[in-house]
Length: 350
Image (cartoon, rainbow, N blue to C red; front, side, top):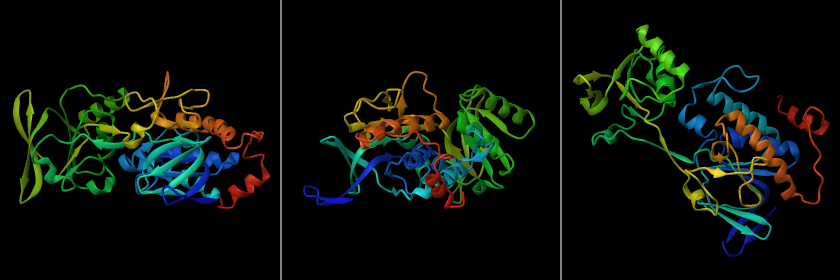
């Protein structure tokens, strides 16, 4: 049901839950909202659902989803979208949540693009916010962006048969050095130290790959990028032994990402280093009816796992139901026991 906001001159869309962020946390929460009988809409500033999974590592394998031994990040997003489909809830892409305003006992969320939502509750599933990669700090680097210089791997096949230099020493850099071994013709990993900032198992795997001649590892830093006929062709690198030249076709710089919460940082919420403290009994923030789940949620012993985000979203919705329908007694629902729900979920052939 919509109404017209006289002040804004915009139609106001009414719902029970506004989910901010269409990554795995937001998509799972959208499904769970349908299971327990809540209406919801999901907003995301990106032009496609998936959040970090599709923006940063769509081809990266994921192993820690229960009952799914292995899937790519994009496959996980696709399966979550399929799971949500029976409920028909809208996902508004290219819509960045801009303002949050308390109107009586409800909340009003307005996007930068002008959409207005009246909602009982808000579920912030914005991950680490918008991500800005730490760029190569060389004056000539900007000219090579997307012309041989990359800050993310969107399609592994893009690097088939190419000589690739991967700069960085964190999990992403090491993961891609391993993942591209059978795709690129040659891989060199460049890091400023001999030790990595990555999981021990990943570090051990890279060292084993180096010993097997599958990856070259150079300790050093980029000093200058080199081009031939206008194309990125190599770099001068500073090492402890002096300067040396590295030849390559593609440079993947993975120095980490700087999180930017954008407008959410201006909302009347406490934030610590870009994360929002929550009550772990229901993942509610200090604002009644406003919840934070996934990477953006802050609490003791927080684990940044997709599995944890699923748990957080499920519990948050139970409290959200009380805000949306304070006069109703919510009945615990198992999808396997509810005949009407079974019929709805079966309608897509799932």
